[in-house]
Image 1 (tube, each protein chain N blue to C red):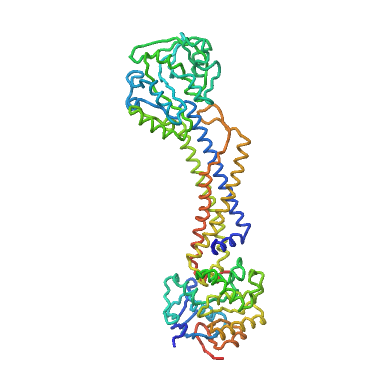
Image 2 (image 1 turned 180 degrees about the vertical axis):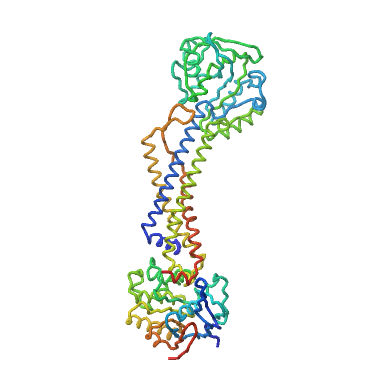
Length: 408
Length: 228
């Protein structure tokens, strides 16, 4: 350690109470930022996983043309030869499985009244594998869970639609839609379950059928998309790029490109976190700037002496900045330790948070301990005191020596 | 022979609001190498102002200061720190030691500024602390030393870089007469044995008695100079 750094250390601990007060501001600032950042990181992680496992998967493959223009008829721009594609895809690294989906719409009727629906044809066993924690069947069962009745065309209704149609388990409803050739088609389906998506507006219109049922009513072998599920979320980009190289007519949409809710939450939380960071930064700057100002004012005569005996103004400025840096580093380090301890306690207690907007269930308050956040906050807090020392230190270094020496 | 420091009709005027207060009114003075000179005069006569100008910690309103034959340029006082560091030493009335540093570290401080190596610093600090008879007190902080000891630390700090000129502003004003005598004897010894030039301001008759030359100031002008 340089001798001037040692001098700065001694000056920092010259008035311990004042240093402690500045340090405490830093500690709380650092801890607050780390906990807020850790909570947001947890939220992003939880939300991204629930988004992926709720319905999106990691990657969705579409016919390129499907994304460029409107279809004139259902599945006109769907994907052909799905089975061959799946066989290639399953051999790729990090791919757990792939599954096809058919998206369609039409009218659902109970004989007395009809409602518009948004239908999805799925591969039930794979949907269950994907939605291992997100799919919430309220009553009844999921599609295809009873092989004995597999010959019947089954439907599960979202809770709002089931309520509108006054549908009970075992009731038969009629789905009406336009086939891929443009003709009208209808099919009776048996209600085997009621589920919730967590999004009230979607629950008013959604239903699911087996993919073969959907293809039958639409009179096609095509599918709307192929959903790819990976073993690691951070491999999304790499696998998506490989898929696009493998299938030139296919566009691979990454989950984060499709997750509008997730992206809105990320933008909102980042704005909140940024705002919080600015507020804490300003508080710490003002507080420590005031302390440094007092400290420097008290040492005016000493500053005059140092300048008189040959200290350059730059050296003097640096000495004060060292003091700011020392307080910053020590305060930030303590803040990091306290934040880490608090994060462990919070994660153990598992406080429940209320349901976010547009969702029907709450989630536990957990704090991720993210090294990047720790490093960022450490750097920010260390620099905060250096920044707050700049103005008083600059003023001190510009003092007229005779005035400083005459200071009482 | 070129004097160590020469002032040519220097003036210094302070502004107090709209009032101009002249502190020095055209001082011309030569200080030769090896002098032991006192600047005396009543309060407000301009002693400290003259010392500040000779010590390059203030600039004159007019006139020139010539140090070792070179005219001092006052470019916002920014380049003068290295001259102060290498050629001048300061002793203050209130000692002005850095309170968080030990006696050793206070004396070492100018050597750190001068970027002396660790071994050089060690030798130079030890020598000078032994000269002022404070080696045993080297680990004491200023608040653990008596007034006389503090002033001796200040002398050691002023001396450690072996400057051409040591300026002392009322060096005995804050210490008792017995200690003042000790300090004067020490400065005298350093002057005689090592040819260190001392220039001090004082209105203490004891100090004036010790000075070989006394420059008397009154209302910012030299009223007489006397050789003891």
